[in-house]
Length: 220
Image (cartoon, rainbow, N blue to C red; front, top):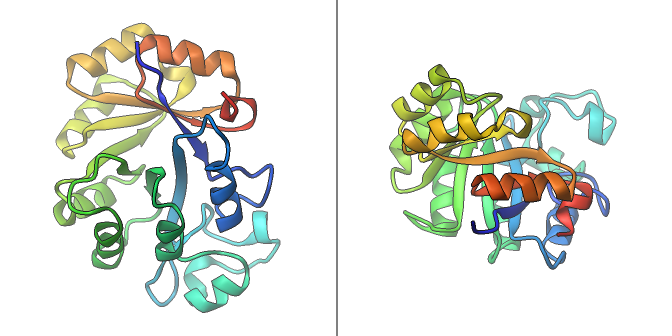
């Protein structure tokens, strides 16, 4: 069984705050790291920016909402634009997680410009079905993953209906039987969020294609 891709969860936040340019670039200096997973939201002026939460409270210690600030204001708070991140990571394998259901032409244009119409080294993913559908229309050649907490038959059916190539699933829900159902349906499976090397190795033996990793699992 091949080794899964090792994707740093929001970068290497042992070095810098999550989803910052410094954290994402630091991850790619880890020898075992193949790429990164990061999150994208839209600023008030419609610019795709890289941040997980809907507010700045947890990481930046500020109360504002992302969608109430322009990209320039967010930049001064240390939140990079998507185009900056894409330019900084030319050789990284990317899982671009799209937060919210308003992504459209702006996000698609940046992804297309950075990685082309049908990249072999990038996917976009989301928990939101409308986002996967809308972006699938704009980037039909890109792989897309439905993010989910299980591999239940209804979840597999949703992924297939959205035209997904695969799913990114809470690692504890990935059992041999569940993974077998996904593979029988023609879906590849990635895992999130793995923090122990032993877990990474076990999931690799089961046949996952990628693991979103933190801590010791990032080191290989």
